[in-house]
Length: 330
Image 1: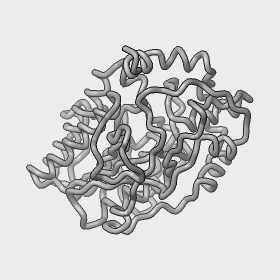
Image 2: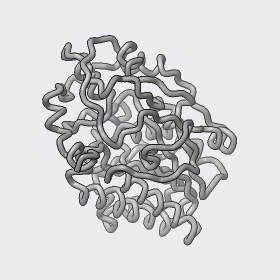
Image 3: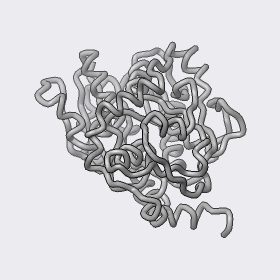
Image 4: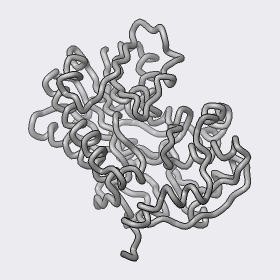
């Protein structure tokens, strides 16, 4: 089998590449290294069945030849994080929407067996019920969530109109080794791990009792592989851990002092995936417990030594636009 992973040098993408190589696939990677890091695949260097193309999915003419003779497409290339999506919506639209159009159209033209799209649970916004089913209302709260949802709509529409075999996976709070260390204020694990290494307190939003469906990255990679090789097409699945855990519990497991910062508008008090659909249709279920996953991260904590160390003051500056545009008092 020949598989193509867009964003394959990124956090989740590199773990998908690992899984595909374990399964004996010939793997091609497209990544422009905006958020992905070539170092994430350094341990696979020299593999004859791995080729990395430094390309941008926004350039259809450039990427199209890489799709030829490919069986499976795993589309993970995207811009992430909330704050920069509020500040630079055009960049997010061009990458996550137009880039996804290019990938989907190239996949159609190449006649691939399956395209698996990395959708986001942020499409649900502030859900009415937990665990949240795939049939829940779609309420994106910020441009990142919207653009990921629009990309999902494109992929599903190409399945509907053109018969492209598509599965979309709505990912819940993915964490694990190689999570991003960019200068952007974003995912809680990257923030906390850099703070722990620097001996600084964890900056907990609100009272820390909010819960998240933290899902370990190798389980997510397994979901991508399972979806690709299955006979299921034209469907959408939540990918979650089967539980939810408070941010305070995460701090306990990481071990360190805590300081609390203001709660932010547009963030749910809980994320919790109803995974009954993916369990019944694909036979997939998360295997790594929260405690096991956090320990795996701690065992590899040196990865985050180059990450920025955030403080309440610097976070306040970074999130000014968040409060400005998403706050209730306008």
